[in-house]
Length: 414
Image (cartoon, one colour):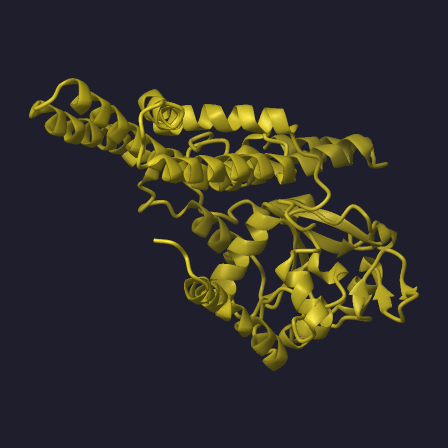
């Protein structure tokens, strides 16, 4: 049926109706009741910045990352399709595409062209804009999730390819009753093979690794601590169990990266009680910026919050080293504690405090390298050695007596 102007208008209205949930953003931003949010959508420019992901780069996956080449991305995608879908499925999809070039009239040709075009446009555009280095397993795992759309289209094309083969077979073997049965059996066999090959991998009903990671970290913190978060794993995992499940309401979570954005403190500072912010934005160079924003560095932040125990998870922003003037980092499991430099380090006491921080029972290397579970497991295993290596480095570098150095080596090895 030919599309009339009325049908086009109805389709356009349906498309716009799908954007209605975006109205929640300015409403929520205006009310400012959310304890965690991203951006300030009370202005049109703020809404546009959020909608287009301008802070990360529109249509980019990551901020300031150098990705793999377009060719490398497409080769990896093809290999992933072969692994996930199997060669027969890819062959059937290819049959569907080739069938459009046959001289015989194909009723499904427009549909095949549509899906093939969708596949090509999406894959090429994504390979161009996905600025992640997929030679790193974790980044490959991130990119693989975006290939699901392409795989779904390939599965549709495979179905059309199977129908094309049956149609051609029916034309050659007129009156054959076996072909319809063969078509159904082939489809069922392909689906069953996918279930058999991938069910155990897809069944994550007992996977609580990231949840346990977050709960262990929060449980290990002293009362009223401030945690400066950095990275997707600690940031998202700790925020979820803290804000959504109400774990450790006495703790305050502050995002290091977000503190560098102009909207973060004006929107969220009031939801971080007991923490003082000596300005509107974190910047290595403190003072009044050209746009009138009052900036503060990490050293200033620690000075005005000296009444709080401050921890960093995981690592500190490399751009601001001002904390080194008056503070040191002491290992606290996966995290680290910022301690005034004039505090004397007692290795025996610190070992007592940090030895049994976590209850972690996962086997080392038991997760796929491209998963966040592997990252969480690696961090927890590394945490067991951090205090020992810290004390060993102290023995190697500190200007202490031979007796003290010997004691430090003993603590490190035991």
